[in-house]
Amino acid sequence: MRIAVFGTKPYDRTFFEEANGAYHHELVFLEPRLSPETAILAKDSPAVCLFVNDDGSEATLKVLAENGVRLLALRCAGFNNVDMQAAQRLHLRVVRVPAYSPYAVAEHTVALMLALNRQIHRAHQRVRDGNFSLQGLLGFDMHGRTVGIIGTGAIGATVATILHGFGCQILACDKRENGRIVELGGHYVDFARIWRDSDIITLHCPLTPETKYLVNADTIEHMRRGVMLINTSRGAVVDTRAVLAGLKSGKIGSLGLDVYEEEADLFFEDLSEHGIDDDLLARLTTFPNVLITGHQAFFTREALQQIAATTLANVASLQSTGTCGNEIHLEPFPRP
Ligand code: NAD
Picture 1 (cartoon, rainbow, N blue to C red):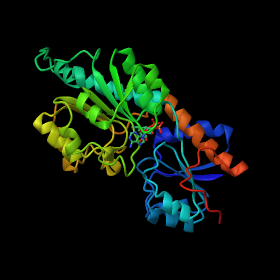
Picture 2: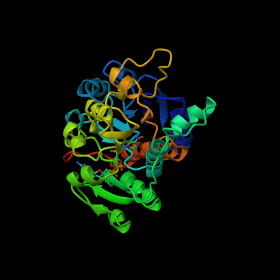
Picture 3: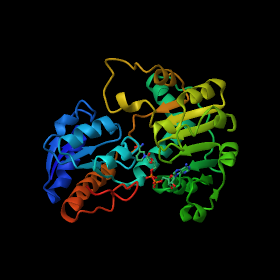
């Protein structure tokens, strides 16, 4: 099938071309991100492939549907950027990659924790500057610390497994209990207990109306003073303004972000010659106890191989059988 691949970076092309050896789809690589303005580029392609910061709003989907697109193949797990109600109304089928190397994101999450705790980012700068002073670099043993994990699906459970190896105590919160957490000696508790008892809080739930701003001024108020907060899920699970206030007051001791609520116009692009025109993000980067990466947690060779292979297999499955186990259904799909 002809697939218009929006927001293509050189690494997408490499992994998709390699995986396509088994499928022989016609891949049309497009650099622009998907938006109402660029959607017309998909004309004559029955399938469109999109990523986390592509615009899957109703306005975009209408242009796609009017131009013959029938299938949206997300090359990611989260689908908060696609208006699923509009997709249903327009008879656009949507598939995604629900699971790929949970190790990629989990290991990056733990990398943020360790780097923040031992201040590796600051130590690196100091040593390069010939400054070997340890003053201000004091960390803590991870062993024995309590980590609150919100969302214990594939990634959250993998984070728990790694941290269990460090000797951390695991507290977890999820609508569905995962047996792996219990096996590790972790305890499912309510949010109040997560906020109250965690030295480190790490977010691994999807962005939904329910989880939007889950971390806000009120919940931060209930956290331990000096808590470490890590978010590798989706930016808007955290109210960034409230987190900034928490950093200023010292309530939040350190912050690790791989995602940011306003990342769509920033992340994945080289803006080094322009500077950051987002004041909130710019302010966050001034704190020594804040470490930000630009949505790179998924970015391992293994993850990209799995993402490309699953995306192309999803399209092939719908094409040949009319069904796909990775299709997103809100309600039974209304057939045209
Ligand atoms: P998953 O579906 O396996 O697990 C998500 C878990 O969150 C589920 O167990 C679900 O029950 C739970 N959950 C849903 N609503 C909740 C709520 N209100 N409170 C508590 N728990 C809730 O997904 P996953 O593969 O583990 O991915 C988790 C999230 O990580 C994704 O939704 C995505 O947003 C994010 N992600 C980020 C990157 C990255 O590169 N930074 C890459 C992949 C995924």
